[in-house]
Length: 173
Ligand code: ATP
Ligand code: MG
Image (tube, rainbow, N blue to C red):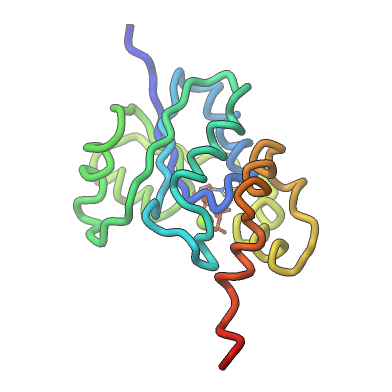
């Protein structure tokens, strides 16, 4: 039997309810999901506070009760768009379809002859990594924007304190 497998990539800094909603809609259409954790090599930066391992943990716990089998894999950046699709497919289980709203990702997969679908957008101004990191830095409420399990991981690793520290400058100068 051939299982239909989809690919979905993001930086997941952090994994939030917008991502969760996209995955819920994908899971109605395919049997398995390959999740690429993009810019995997980045961490401890204001736009990329969490490591690939921490993001793997967020996704594993957030999707514990989801009714789709998933593989979350780190994908480091490759500064060479022309060969990016073969780079990705060399590191992932085979997939039949890509879900993305990112114009570059859509362009690259379509050029390679891979089917691409655009998932529905879920209240984008609220459910966005940028907005969640801004709230963390400004001591505004953010927990309700991420799955409970993700909030627990962020607490466990001291994520908010780290984000504040890496966004600061040397106070002795
Ligand atoms: P950042 O602001 O840090 O870029 P983000 O919210 O865009 O974070 P990404 O990890 O960049 O999160 O997103 C991965 C993919 O998920 C992107 O293609 C993005 O378009 C999509 N996505 C993000 N938020 C939503 C949402 N609320 N509804 C639907 N798709 C979303
Ligand atoms: Mg984004």
